[in-house]
Length: 208
Image 1: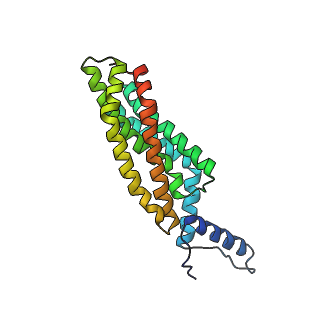
Image 2: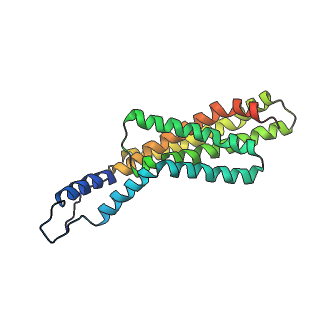
């Protein structure tokens, strides 16, 4: 049994465990050797999360869509509310790929975080849009008014949260630092997806 004080990420745990696995591959006759402990459990958990990444993200989206279907009792508003989340999650995944970021518990669950942020902003915008439609405005006028009335509040909320998460970027712990950086980026992507994609989609698919 030994302790290592300088490991600060699950990725480092994985590299350590992989090295120990190779070192223990040929134990003396009659013995069995394998690494064990918290670092091994963490490395195994990350491996399973990577294998189930797509399933976890789709499950998050399906659960959110189910709640929205119950709340709206109509398919179109619910689908509109999750559309920016799907697009923003795609943007986030593409950004991770282009940046060459390694998989970690934070990046594996990234799409689920994007779904939460984007859906919240979508619901706020749609509520205002549908209210303007109910008052007799045309779809174009209703979407423009909803963006003017709710858009600044969404942007202000996203910026405040992004700054709060961004502060974590100064942490010396890689996992905490990644959480702050990617959560701030997710918020900005979710906000852009809602304010850019939702108005034209709502005008085309939701007129009452």
